Length: 504
Ligand code: FDA
Image (cartoon, rainbow, N blue to C red; front, side):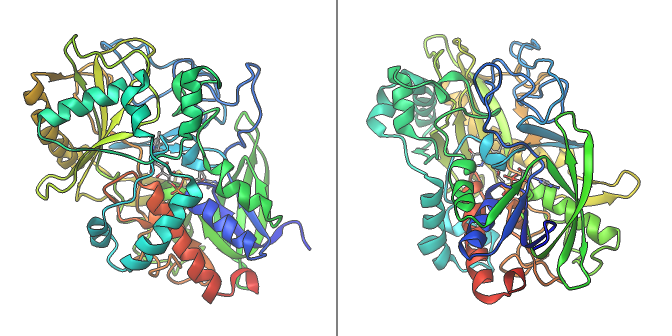
């Protein structure tokens, strides 16, 4: 056995990648997982693996010299972001001209930095977005499987109603109700038993200690604790970290050759290696997978790739906003970072909005209600390859965010008028009420059924698969990781049953 050959390689270690790794390992196929970020298992000098949002250090962000939190100012003051030493930290903000995309970096991908919200999309909207996927097996088999494997549960309602840590959510619920809007509890992968012990003072605080976008030290069932732990447990899966795949090409025997750059914690490339494999599963996320395929097509390495590679990108209609409450409606100095409640107005066919009620865990009373709204934005963007810089560029324009803002504004104008409240204009670095220039939910670039077949098999190339968020055409109406996981389960079941994976 050669050290540089694996029957299967998985690029990335987020949702799509983690599902692929586990199912390949279970099938007895020797698999290498290649992840550009760190493995987050070693405490720093403060005894913690991850830093908090209120005291960020080098562990917070991917090679930045200053943190770039989405909510960047308070009372227009630059008090949120801090100077840091460049380091392979856990959260990246990738800046394109009209849109910034936040992504997780490390073993577990987005699961390390996200809010753990685990929502299954409405069946009608799923069918509208992915008509080529039969809904019955998804809703009977793959969504339940994904939710079980991810460890999604719902906060016990009696505790939710009583705890000071969710005052902010209950205040926002009452204000939504005054506007005639319905709220729903959202399942989450955070361990609510652990959260209750945090509140009781019998467990080290994590969600109750301002930890989330730079990682949670406890409580969150991120992929390194679920799918990836099981994948490594098969004994078939090997992990290479701080290893960034630069390019792909076909091997003479029909497999694939990957060029992989290994970096150290200063970002210096310490070696460039070639790894070969029989089957290649791309789970580098909407940005990562699309970039690898575009580069391969445009440099002529994989010239048969579809013209559809690079198309169909959207940010799931994300827009963030804050509302200012009256002084007699405090939202609480104590806020759990794990969102559990949403305004669900997706059934409004003219103006569907699913707005997660987000924490503002400042450690002091702010009277702010913060929301991440998911809207139905029909605009899509395309990635192009810049040969001179050897990178990809996303052509999303600021004007394309207008439908998202209009939808959020229509809903929250109602909330404001029913409660005689106003927006906050001080939170996003200038005087905007709506932050429409970043997203947490990048989707598309290698859309299912267009750049691939109906199961993620890449058109034109046997043994090449996509399993991540790049398959979803720009919008899914809810937080996306349950859908990404369920689609990956469906792909792996089909591919392992029908294809000669790993050159078997
Ligand atoms: P994902 O992005 O998870 O993983 C890709 C991995 O590939 C990364 O680890 C990356 O480092 C690696 N990679 C990329 N290019 C590579 C290369 N060339 N070589 C090697 N490795 C490479 N969703 C949700 O459902 N509920 C929620 O509560 C939230 N909240 C949330 C908060 C924040 C702050 C963010 C940034 C995102 C969310 N999300 C979310 C979104 C969710 O995290 C996201 O949709 C998924 O992580 C996407 O899963 P993928 O499998 O597509 O890739």
